[in-house]
Image (spheres, rainbow, N blue to C red):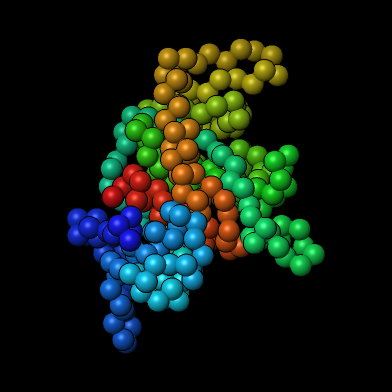
Length: 252
């Protein structure tokens, strides 16, 4: 198949420091297995439908599940993102990801316990919270159930916000505690006020227009079938699917 995905030597080099050390029998070809994992995630295929060029599908799945449980793919993305230190502006936002029936089927427990899947007006969803740099490249990711507010995601991501001058966010992040926390950290908030506020909040409208870059980032991530539709029951595995998509699109 001419449309198969293969990692190049230049792409493999920054990933190798994050590989766990093998114990006992050496691992099979890392480049072949990781390329197959990326191909499956990008196209939303079942593991058994993996092209034969990537080797046995059980090898792909076992590597994917084992490294996802250890958080290796998430560390790869975070590690490469940290090397591109942003000093000026970051953006924060959240988006909904549709959950497939294979992720929500729990035998009587709607959404399941600890699956981070919630019921919204659009059905069963997971919400992806993200911080990206001034170029729209993701720096930190966090997932919750779909009905969880943006404030929860902001609290979880706050400690990972780098020391920058500005943070851009929409009205969903207009909270006094969030503005004060940013101010204490020396970050200026460019966040419009909610309509319910009695006093108008001033913000830089010209700078705020740059926030479309995080929306573009979400759109590019959702081009990957396994990200746009959640097939995985385990939240950690699903977060790995998002991280590996961000890794390939922006950091390799």
